[in-house]
Image (cartoon, rainbow, N blue to C red):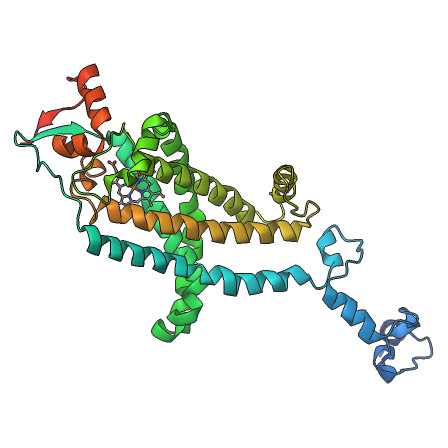
Length: 368
Ligand code: HEM
């Protein structure tokens, strides 16, 4: 070996030894390479006596109570290790909110009893002998109805699966199929929500003018809409008081769903409850007005869920009366043309208005 090669070999060996020594110093944190047992594990004490006289038990008790600390990272939520409201939310969601499902069963029971009592509400005068029909909803109105209705039904089914599915579906279809179903259901929920938003906005624009409460609504309500008495047909304009109730519940419930849904879709970015509670508290309520970003999301989840049950109960009643419960109603959202006698019995003032103002435009036409 030449002298040059020998020098290079020694230099290489020297660099290797130096680098090795430097790494070991870094690893042991000791120039003498002294290895001590990990301080955190000696005697069960937290290193550095950082908590002073506070015992570990006391420390963890506070953490579990939800005490908030400070952190230097941008996400300040990390300053709270355990968020106690989360436990309460889970308990509420799995118990009281889940029990709201009985509301839906209660509604079905009421409808069964109503059907037994009243049967199907028929067109009492029978279908118009000349086959005359009146246009009740035009194509845009029907499209809007079914856009809202179909998206609402898909959102309800995928939402209910998120709440109740785990209780029985894994046993029926297997855990893996349930996981796939729920994943796809959640994705569908996220995207179909936009169709529902469009539907609600369009429904409001198209039908608000016919849903302003008026004097005839009081008369209609006073006799229960004639729903319980054969041969009783209180006067009604385009929408009766019951339908106005459905309309405003759909709009209000829809808005609650839309805003809380967006807050869940974009968590920590949309916060509305603190501000909303400030307004509500002006009327004597005492809701908390200082809410963390996480609490905002939790309130959104609660309102989203609870309003679903209220709206669903109402819609079950609506679907019943629009199909099985009343002869001839479904045509309004089918081809849009309803029997003239049906219209006269349920919306007498509207028929007069339509026929008196513009008979030609009213779409009155005999059936083929
Ligand atoms: C299978 C489901 C549904 C059926 C069969 C159905 C049926 C009907 C019928 C027949 C009407 C016209 C009533 C009339 O001419 O006076 C109507 C109107 C209406 N529907 Fe539906 N509907 C369904 C789902 C929904 C859903 C899910 C919503 C909202 C989320 C909804 C909201 C409305 C509203 C606001 C009206 C106008 C007000 C009223 O008539 O109550 N519908 N529906």
